[in-house]
Amino acid sequence: MPTILGQNQYGKAENRVVKITRDGATHHIKDLNVSVALSGDMDDVHYSGSNANVLPTDTTKNTVYAFAKEYGIESAEQFGIHLARHFVSSQEPIHRARIRIEEYAWERIETSDANSKFIGADEVKHSFVRKGQETRLTQITYDGESWEVVSGLKDLVVMNSTNSEFWGYVKDKYTTLQEAYDRILATQVSGRWRFNWSDDEQKMPNWEKSYEQTKKHMLQAFAETYSLSLQQTLYQMGARIINHRSEIDEVRFSLPNKHHFLVDLEPFGLKNDNEVYFAADRPYGLIEATILRDGCEARIPVDLTNL
Image 1 (spheres, one colour):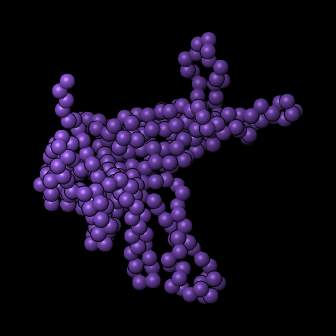
Image 2 (cartoon, one colour):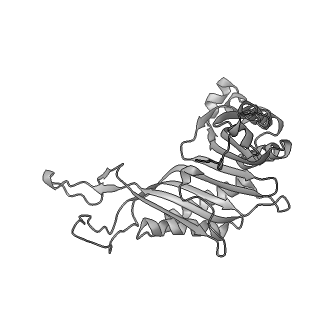
Image 3 (cartoon, rainbow, N blue to C red):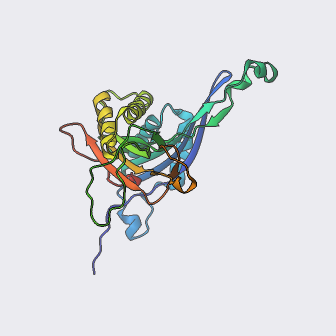
């Protein structure tokens, strides 16, 4: 039975690169995990094994490290744009480059004045501790003419200890869940947002500021929404981003409901006045949705793991 080659790409995945920028005695860290995927005129390598159009994946790895030195790493997005443009513009058989980046944040360790006089003032500016809040993400796709930049984060755990209810839902003969009028609302945010920057003629966003402000609006919406459902909170988070960040047209969230159930303390003669909870890790409700600027079409995949 005849067969044909379908969509394909190749590259080097998970290139870990750490860039130290030395500003005198003060050091700055960018810690990235970079995955490169290239596609284009690659039929022959699949059909006959000819490597005439193949840029080795080892070369893509080397390019990541060389570019960290040559261009520095101003932001994950800017670094990915440099890489994608290079691969498409320098290799004729390559028509499309997709760069995925995870960024791991570090923060400076603060030391007291008393300590610094012993270890030296210069030394306190190059000690860091890994931040544990979230992992920053971006994906840059370039076809030689247009760009698509989708950024986001994962593993950002948030909680409201009150101002959340869940009641008035459908009940059938299998329903045992009790209605809640004061509950814990907790989730582990996985989110992506798509920028409307797509052309070199457009003004490029300030990637670092955009990420900081987008995360800020997301967290403020989570904290300030009196929630009757996690779906309502999700929508408010996305809507606030769209309404405050003009460079973003689409936001997609995947929010697992990290359930906290009140423990029955009556067998011990104790009253549990919304104080003691059992934190259940599974099974969990999974709430997912896309929030769009009016007039825009959705492009972020439903399955965020495929981004």
